[in-house]
Length: 55
Image (cartoon, rainbow, N blue to C red):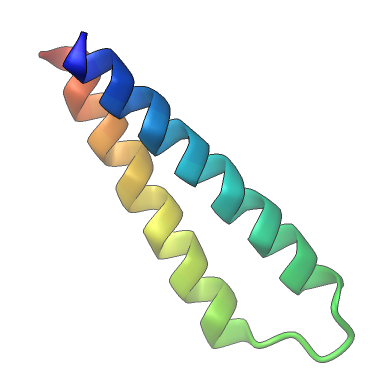
């Protein structure tokens, strides 16, 4: 059960990052470096969720 809870937590963080990326992209003077950093964080979370699902 702890693994399922961790996957849910990571999924929530992943969703929040997606929302933050969307908000940042809608800004007229968005920061490409910040967006790149957010996308890297999001990918890292996705990879961790996939790893947990395989165990």
